[in-house]
Image 1 (cartoon, rainbow, N blue to C red):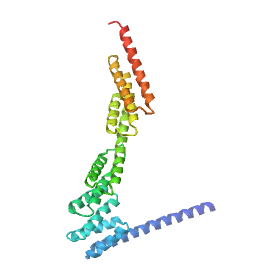
Image 2 (cartoon, helix red, strand yellow):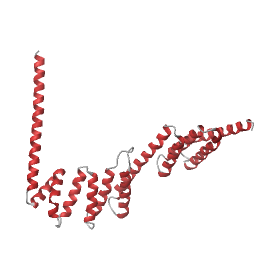
Image 3 (cartoon, rainbow, N blue to C red):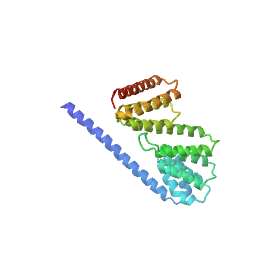
Image 4 (cartoon, helix red, strand yellow):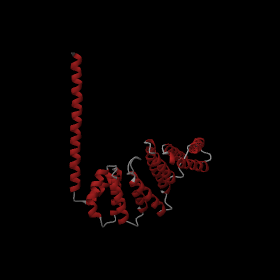
Length: 287
């Protein structure tokens, strides 16, 4: 009985603690909301700008964004406007609102094309697209855009200190695109759609000829066309096993030192043996 009373007492204390926390948080939020409303109603733009700068330095980007947005019309024709717009764009970026940030970086370049910060804004616009790049299995439109914009940045600013980072990001994007294409090709193979798999792996190899996995892709082309040949009707088998043989020869020429060379050779031998048997069967079978 005593244990039950103590347990109930502890639960009450926990409940009161949580309730107090919720009430305190509500009061704090209400207080913050009132103070922001009061600030935004303040008629002194210089004071608002100082407060916005303080919010920005303290990384309170939501508040800074609100105040910058409020004072922009007043400062639009002043020397301070460029710095305000610059920080306003970064507020969106730091709040992970990358779509809006990209538009703001773009607008900055249009409004201040000769700014000393133009190169940085050009890079950040491309980087904002990169930050919107999703997982490999999803649509990669933003990844492609990021790669294109980063390459344009490299071409436009050949002396930039950001060239190395831009190239590294392009490599990351290419690796993601390659992974997406690889998964698509592998799915065809796993589903038994071997002709489609052969085509998909061929496209993959053509698109990424310098890939560390290039020999693996070529072997998958061989495997795919071998399975496709196996499943073909009798009158098509010789022709399709000959295609496998050609792929095997290409593998040997292109990847003479590959650790997968023996496996590729096994498909070559199997295909040659199968064609020989098929030809012998045709000879034995009367017309």
